[in-house]
Length: 606
Ligand code: M6R
Image (cartoon, rainbow, N blue to C red; front, side, top):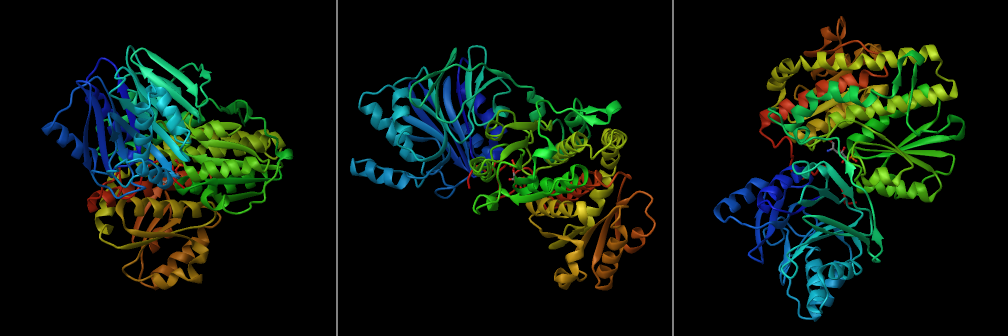
């Protein structure tokens, strides 16, 4: 978590840094700060809270300079306070850091014995001291950073400026993302590419163990051992507008509305309608070589994995286990070279997912991924990646990334099914047809935004919710509940509807709205039974049903409809109204929808 940014070039650095930080704020928003080389002096502004607080500080006390660094923080070591906010300065050296320095206490003791005075509780401050010590001993900035990082254990992306060498910025990376934006006579460093889009769409992605020196006209990358690295810039497809709200009140709402397009973008180019097949570039997995698939992911991506299990088992007939990445890595998981491990992550930077991938690779498994961010750590760690085309997802609550992940899993499942012959060409055609008609159906659901907003007015004051689903829709009950709790701070639980009678039914009374997912599928009669059970105990039912439903509507207090679809794609359609419900309830409750408290978009700590 945390976002770092650096700029050197002809523009006023503050404007570029603040714009970059705005785009990185989703990574953490406990405090923020920038340091600029103003008249040769490293000058600092920091503030507790969201970026607008720093903006206010800068209005009162402006800064001027053509190079600088900035940071938006998700607190790990030390509470959110001005002293703990980055940048950290020591003797003319300023540092911003994303990651965790595991051996900072030992380093702090060592530096204190030499007379160092620490001003914060952070792990980061040891880095500015270490670099300053090297500069005092006569080292140039890049060498000083190289020597400093050789003492660090842990994870980091760093950006450093120094009064001694005002013509450059230095960056370093170890297990936290760092990209270099290569503009016309201006260069940037950033935790992710959204922050550089206003100056350039050309980026070079640093790899672990690399250090970079940037000037307005140059980028020099070396390994920590000093070996020169030559790497061409990658062209970024994302535009600055894609990372803006474009008139929507919140990113979350904009991203919900983008789903018809991004879902189509994700399957377009992969489906071959006339053959009833899927083309996946460089994907050469054969079902016969795979004993089982293990899906690892966290949060919403894990919910996508749970849906994926149904798709893979039904279409490819390969057994699937779905593991929370944070659990997988702390067991001794049974995977070997006949296991296909599939990691799912929007950001590609989730620490637990990356650690699970490393564990699986150690055990000899083939590891592939579904990811939304090119050149992210996950795409580099895995042998093959399917890139979803959700575009930048800025709202902390994942919406369009989830639905595009479902599309990705569907495509891979169809491919494995076709490759193994378990899906015939005819059946393949039906499967592809179902997929390509999906966007229109999502568009249709978007038309019901107003009705769901009205429903939110009726329900936003409740303190607890239950979501029920069965089979392939059970993960959607989990996802609906997660969405509600993270953006509205209302307690919500998702349950497999069949489990109700084994405990949760005790919770049902008139104060407990129950969101029942009851589309027309094989488990519909059972869902009707669950609705009766809830009604008998006075619970209020919001049913999400297929258009034209005759029975569930009679049992529910309120109804949301979705168009008819194959059971394999119903999860995707059911998700959209649940996103709306969570969103509108959160707006009515006045929470910070795009940046809910305590959360960060990329969870890069374990
Ligand atoms: O970037 P990832 O998909 O790996 O992130 C995983 C989770 O942190 C993420 O899905 C989280 O649960 C979201 N806040 C859910 O909306």
